[in-house]
Image (cartoon, rainbow, N blue to C red; front, top):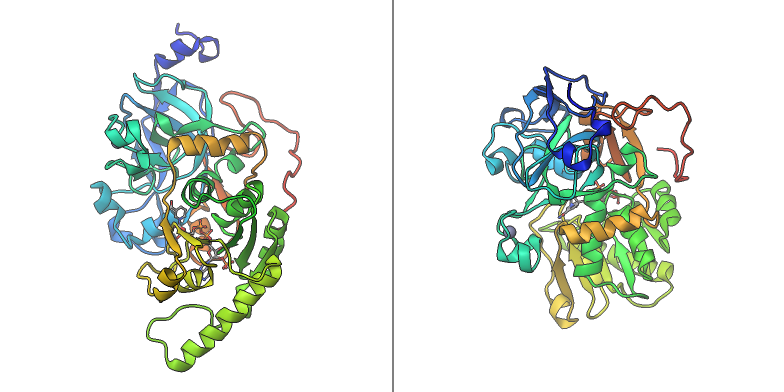
Length: 439
Ligand SMILES: NC(=O)c1ccc[n+]([C@@H]2O[C@H](COP(=O)([O-])OP(=O)(O)OC[C@H]3O[C@@H](n4cnc5c(N)ncnc54)[C@H](OP(=O)(O)O)[C@@H]3O)[C@@H](O)[C@H]2O)c1
Ligand SMILES: [Zn+2]
């Protein structure tokens, strides 16, 4: 009779034999060493590209095979990101055309349990509790990966967006370098919620913008997925921010997270950039920009523009982001929710020697460094709502319609009370750790 995984050494775990079963019900954690032939997954296909309620459909899929440097992870909870919305729409790029497969399982955030590892994987074993970062690179020790920054690698991809096996399934396959320790103090759903957006703003602020103590920052969408971590990190780095939101409720949230102030953009109906504006529209816009700039200065307690603007809204906000910066200021951009063909007055850029800096996710070292601040409790996930497996399309739909804030997380194999494989249900209720406004 083969040994119980609980009694195996770490080396034995790596080479254990797996018992195949046809399938495992969603919301359950099978014993370690049990592997289903098929898995439940939310699948996007080209013929149903569109909004999330249409594009995400549940199917039974074959389990992915893993390579020598990869790991198969049992997904306990999966975080919702805007790239799931982009993937479902098939716009601006078709995810299936990108991967060459006829299906796509979205999801670039997860917490889970390592289930199986490839031959070359040294540091992780089945049973390890992990969160995942979503940067994949060539895995062949190219010059960029080995000697500079894996984000520069020609093979760089975002797992779950540019690769077909993301986290909205019972199992996912990842490169072993994507595995990070799960913070023990967090529930599965909290742990699955923060990686993509937090690690993105970490690189963006620390390594790309090179934010310095005392600097003043304007953060767009400050109660959104990127925003809630930008606000926390800016404070942690000894700088200050004013965040932009579309409601006072969101404003209260970011004040709790450490913002110096907030601006409700609903008070500025003409703020957004529009191509081909009439002279009257352009005049009304400039009036709003000036008033917005004054409010920023008043909330920040200074008489100049920000040193740094955190941009990801794109088309409608970018021209204002460039305009509002102080001389020599930097706008750091990592997304374009409202459109990517930007149109702005470049005179403000060169005359005042401002900089535009692009930033995209982060590398494994930055993710690990950022994760240490979550492990130590210094940066907290801001999970505002937990969804069930069945509600995964709904969670994306709310995000697509900007009816959310903070981060959403969805239970996959975790049910609320059961954590490790084979452990009995816990009856004790966890105290609420983050006193956030009710969603
Ligand atoms: N390159 C990367 O590595 C990377 C990583 C993460 C995200 N992204 C991209 O960055 C963008 C934001 O991601 P996220 O997770 O933070 O999304 P999110 O949770 O939806 O937050 C975005 C925020 O932007 C604000 N916003 C939306 N439309 C706006 C508009 N027309 N004008 C002004 N503000 C607007 C909203 O705040 P209010 O309505 O409250 O103002 C919203 O909360 C997405 O496009 C995503 O794909 C890129
Ligand atoms: Zn490489």
